[in-house]
Image (cartoon, rainbow, N blue to C red; front, side, top):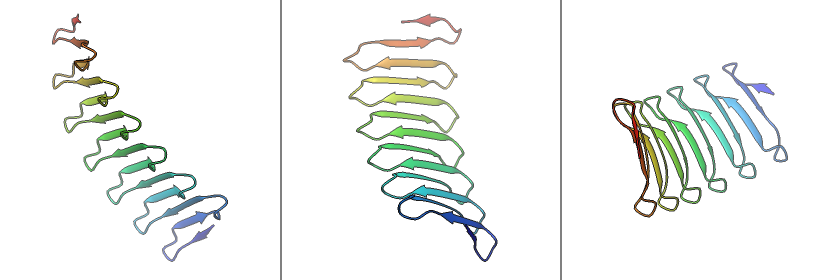
Amino acid sequence: MACNDLGLEECQSNESGLKECQSNDSGLEECQINDSGLEECQINDSGLEECQINDSELEEYQINDSGLEECQINDSGLEERQINDSGLEECQINDSELEKCQINDSGLEECQSNDSGLEEYQSNKWGLEEG
């Protein structure tokens, strides 16, 4: 463990440990495991957290500049989840899984499978279910 000139903590283990943790000049934390570990976590300059596993694990998690959460697994994982600019949650699996779920502008949940699945579920404005 060592501290840099600004007194920020920096600690890491060697290539066998594959873990590196440090605080940047702004005091923001950045932690990552090298390519053998495939995990990278950091907080960007705006103080937003970004965590992802590289393409070998195919998962990406981050909070965008607006503080909205976006989670997705790339095309090999086929899952995508995010909250849109209005703070509404949208979750879907890509065309290989054919399922799409989201909450509409009224805060109502809508779930459906594409034409191959032919299923649609949603709650109307009065909270009634129809399918």
